[in-house]
Length: 156
Image 1 (cartoon, rainbow, N blue to C red):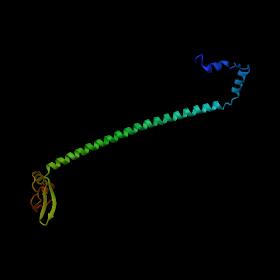
Image 2: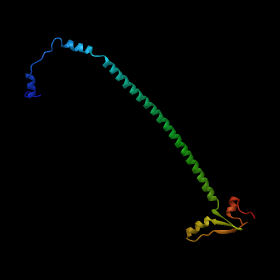
Image 3: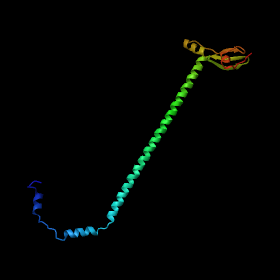
Image 4: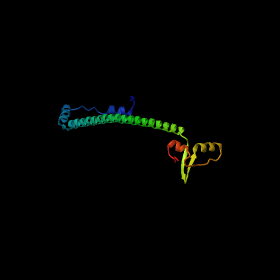
């Protein structure tokens, strides 16, 4: 505050008050008369705060352990999925090998003494060449790629 501050001047003009000689004794007596409940409340509040902190710590530890278990479960699940993917890839590769080794012939059925067979290889080549493809009627007893590959067909 500056020396010319009106508030400062007003405070200087107020009369000085001197505490009575019993003032200190009365204040201390009033503090002694104060109920002890405030100390108990303070202790109870501290105990509650500590209990809450302990509960939060315990919950954090349990959650942390649970997170580790969930992470292990996810890792095991990922490993199982990877193993299954590898097994499926092996099976697909074996099916592709089998398909490449066999003749691409589709058995359409029979009509009387005739087996109806569709040569998919010829169909594919004809579609690439832009020409028509047709199913072929094979008399029973004649070896077809289907009967040679699968052992089915009429063995006459």
